[in-house]
Image (cartoon, rainbow, N blue to C red; front, side, top):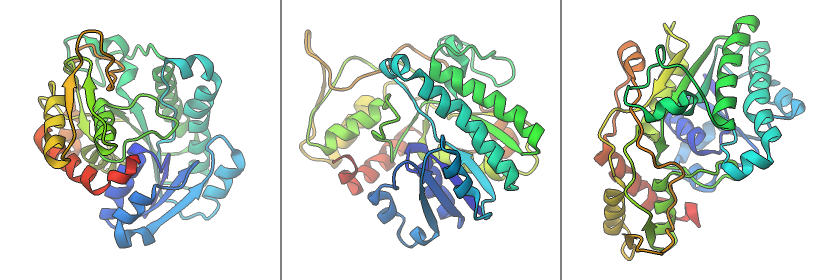
Length: 331
């Protein structure tokens, strides 16, 4: 099987590619930039099963050429803009074009090419203010009330691609991704809101101290390699019972940043961190630090047997090994 990953040079796309290649599949990485050299080196001989295509999901000619070879069996449409407030205000039309219109263009091309399944990565942000309540987020009973342009476009694209998939005869499934961190996250020019874990990794790799603003509030989370495993299960599941699945790991992720910093102090000598003092500007930013509830994952765990490999401690240890091996990723 050959799986197309749009946004294939980005954070989630690279993690999925890594997982699929380990499973023996071929991948096509479609992005506006080439895959990072560090990634291509890290996968060794599996690089022979990677086809990198540079193009834009908003350009019809690029999409036509992408599907023209007729060898794509599955699609993961990960290309998106994750904007901060400034980009949301200034580039709203581009955000709509990429996150919504291009999703339908890729779905239409997939249907015409006879693709077996399209997996669309939605977001926990579609739940809006329910994120900050006490009840776990449930795919069926928690109503989506998105309150940012990003969340609105993700929910609109989710519903649109499911609707048009039925119209075009395309098998579509969606996964609402929780807060994710891990290898291959970085500044790709379309992802404004980097996790504090990534920001700390960048500081450590560049020989800079990490100055945290405050304690990081509780939230749902998933390690990127567990997310890749879950998405692989959704791509290949036989006759899934639902169209929408929450993707998260219900573990105790509370205030892991000091542990992450301590882990890097051990693995990267010279790295220093602290909480800011009065009047001091932090170097690590928290885009949203309100306490958040958990996501119910009964569907994917009960129906598809998803079982995370990485609890908090294992995730930090694995991430630290990756960072030590790929320090130049942030240079």
